Length: 218
Ligand SMILES: [Mg+2]
Image 1 (cartoon, rainbow, N blue to C red):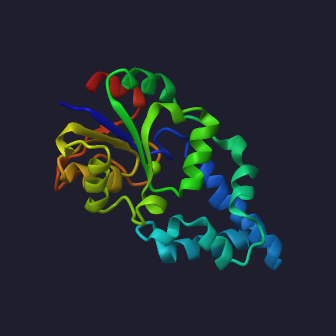
Image 2 (cartoon, protein in one colour):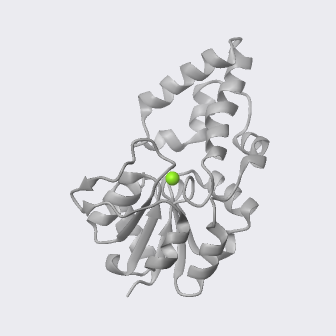
Image 3 (cartoon, rainbow, N blue to C red):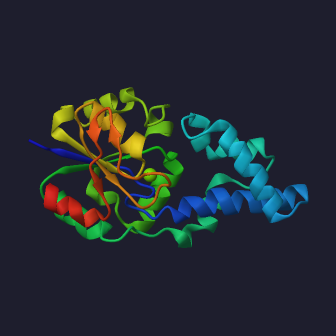
C-alpha cells in the first residue's frame, strides 16, 4: 500500500521561473557589472560554464561555488531574495497537496541547494505539508540521479520502495531512476526540454501534464 509521496520542487510544485531568474538572469547581471561586459555576453559565457559542469555534477547546484568562481561580490541569500517575487506555485499545487496530505506522508526530494528549498517553501507557505524536506545536494552530498539517493530517502522516510510514489519534472532523475527501483513514479511534463513520453528500461514513462491528475491515480 502506498504510504509516502515524494515530490521534486522546482518545475514540479514551484514554477521553474524562479531558478531561471536567479541562475540565468541574476548571476549574468552581476557578472556583466563586475567584469564590464554586456548582459548578453555574460549570459552566454556563464551558460557555457554551467554546461561544462552539467546537471549530473553536484557543483551545478552549489550557488556559492559559482559566486566564488565568477568573482561576484553578492551573497547567495541576497541574490535569492532579489528575485523572490518570482516564486510561484505550479497550477493546482496547493489543492493537490491538501488532498494528498489527508492520506499520505509527503516529502520533498529536491536537487536544489537547501537555501533555495527553504526560500521557496517558506514563501509559498507549503512547509507544513512535508514530514521530510531533503536537499539531495546539501543534505546527502549527492545528486538525485543516483539510485543511492532514493535508497537513502526510503530509509529516512522508513518506507519500502514499493510503498513510495515519486513525482517530478526531470524525465530521468524523477522518473527513470526511481521507477527502476520499484518506486511508482510520475513524470510531470511541460517544463523540461526533450521530455516527450519515452520507453525506458523501467517501461513506458508514466507522464502527467497537471498535478491534478495525481488525484485520479493516488
Ligand atoms: Mg525539477
